Image (cartoon, rainbow, N blue to C red):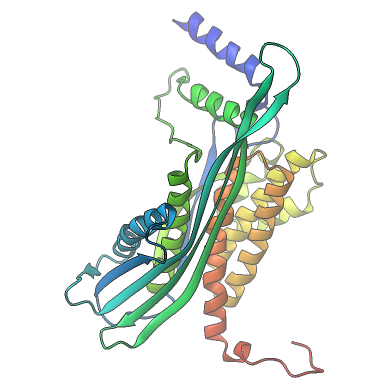
Length: 345
């Protein structure tokens, strides 16, 4: 009934007023779609490939789990971005060999001490999640010739607190209440990692993306949220694809008074720089935009560490940045030559 629905919504507003006003992404999220293009760093000698993954310490549960997951994720990512590739263990044109050297993954509850009352003792206040995956990677042609090789080192480190969890849950509840006259669209799950396996999944996915970006052209459409509130008027430039004006508007406006609020302005600048990087006409130009984007994303995360939506953009842009660093060096032989003393670069 309308009265019951209105009462339920009013109760949620009382519980979480911050969700409905001020800076943030809002319950009705605004998104833009970027075409994320990363050209392959090497040319594969053929379409048939095989992937072999091992763990340096096979008895280590983290390394074994990472090796098992990495095998299937690399295979899936390669075929997903290049449908002409085929998995052929018997006669591969390219053999991709990965070895897990280090795997650490922890999800540790954090506690606060209550000094009085019936609940005296240690009470959980959040979750500290951290991990690192270090892998060697080589790609060889059938005759043994090296096609590509590089070390891969990915990390994950974040703290989720009860406030963040409460906000996330309330957003999910609000999202399930249909607006009058509107059809309900099921919101995507925004689960936070809580176990060692969750953390390993994140690390392996990032490592697999690194491998795929080296070997095949990765081209995907990525839906990215825009921060709203005081930034809403400037978002029209992003929706129109006018990314230079979008970034200029955010950089010239006065920083928001509250540091946590201004984090969303910095985040939006990062989105603009990332979009300009994907549209750049050279690897060197793309690299500059991605460097600016990762700096803004990191500053946003430092200013407002409770905002979990600031985590994934850093990973996404770091993969692109590392990729274009190598491409810009390959495209400019002079960059490989050390500068002579006494002369500026």
